[in-house]
Length: 254
Ligand code: IPE
Ligand code: IPE
Ligand code: MG
Image 1: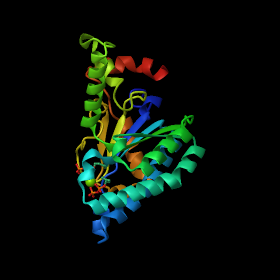
Image 2: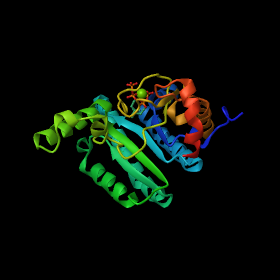
Image 3: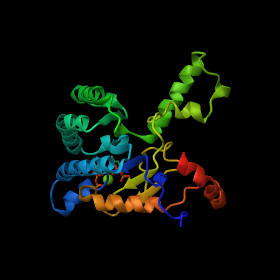
Image 4: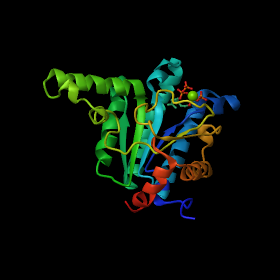
């Protein structure tokens, strides 16, 4: 009985999401792709509401990848406008609901207007603790690892760190999301089964869940399906099933 009963640990602390399928959603309706992005912005709220209701403490959303800059100029421009509008529209309400907003990715590539709003959103919501909302924008997992490598090299060059002292903790502390638990659950909508240069380091032991549903179609029932699936999985972290079962009572009371 106890072996299969959901435990508090079965609720992910940190959910990471690739919001994919906006373009196809619009194309199926014979509408321009940007209409799909607009519809996708609504699904972001569905996801945030779900996390707040279920007590999920951190949510990282992949909004725009390093590679997405290579899309047609028209689409990139429209996405930037949408991004700006969303920042203007949503931050007040997020703040009111106790959400701390942060951005990861290459901020320098955005316009001054967007950078300023990102900074303002982060400052305004800094003290909130109900949900950590991380928006990955102009983010790439390889870039993240590269930045960490550069920071380590700089510390070695400055004499603050010895090369032989570089361990996993030293790398991890220089990566994005260093202060959050690693994602427990990853969700990708849109039917493709790939990581697309999202959190490469941080997803090492994350449970992966995919759905054919396109991002604008996202609803609470689908998110619940992912939660149920997650709750039934055994996370072994390289150990044996017997070892994990032995450790379970300790973990539940932790
Ligand atoms: C995800 O939807 C949003 C961004 C990458 C900005 P897509 O625009 O990739 O939609 P599809 O995959 O082409 O349908
Ligand atoms: C991943 O989706 C990036 C975001 C959702 C922001 P893509 O649509 O860019 O990924 P690929 O090209 O299908 O791998
Ligand atoms: Mg896509």
